[in-house]
Amino acid sequence: MELKINLWRGIRKPSSYFYQLRESESTRGLLFYTVLLIYLSSVIYGVNAAFGIGTDILSDKLISTTLYQYAALHSYFIIGSLLAGLLFALSFLLLPSLFFWSVTEESYKKIVHIQLIALIPLLLENITFLPLMSFMGLEWMYSPLSLGIIAQEAFQQDVLVSFAGGISLFKVWSIYLQFRGLSWLSDRKPALLLFYLILIQLLFIGISVFLEYIDFSLIL
Image (cartoon, rainbow, N blue to C red; front, top):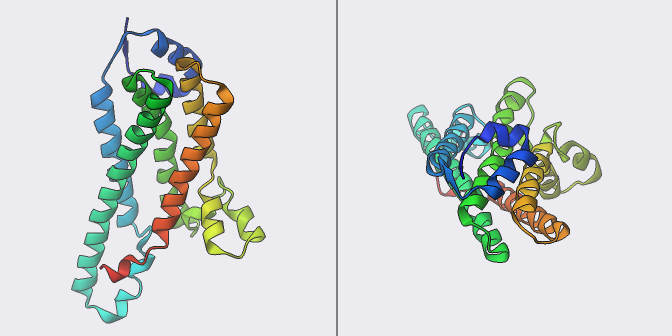
C-alpha cells in the first residue's frame, strides 16, 4: 500500500495516520514536502529578520556606520537568517531521523515523514515571534507560550532564561507528534523513545541559545 503524504491529517489525527504509515509499503510526496518545509522555514526566518527580530546585534552599528552601510548590514543579516532557517529545517528533518534509524532499524523515509509533521509546530512557533515583537514588544524567549516568563522571575542569568524560553508548548506538541509516530513505527520501549526525543529537543534549544549569545557584530 502506498501512502500519500498528508501533513494536515498527520497533525489532526496522528494515531490513525501513523498507523497507516506503519502499514504502508511506500510513501508519495516525501521529497516535495521536504523541500517545501525547508523553503518555508527559510522564508519565515527571513521575514522575521526583515521585521527586526534578532537585529539587536546591529544596534551598535547605527552610530559608527552610514545609513547605506547599515542597510547593507541588515541585508546581510536577512540573508544569514534565510540560511539559518534552511539549516534548521534540514538538520531537524535529517539528523534525528538518522539517529532513530540507527537505533530502531526502521525505514529512514518513514522517520523523515514523522519529522515533517513534527516540524510544523516549530514553524508555527517561529511565526508567532513576529506579532509578539511587533504588537507586544516581547523577545522570543518571553513568549507567554513558553517557560521564559516564569524563568525570568526564578533566575537572574540571561542564559537560563533564554534556555527556559525555548521550552514552549510548540516544542511539547512537536515531541508529542514524534513520540506518537515513533511509537507506532518502532518496538522500542516508549520511555526510551521519549527520553531520546526530549534530549534531542533540548540539544536543539541549547544550540539556539548558544547562537543567540554569539557576537555576530564582530563578523559583520
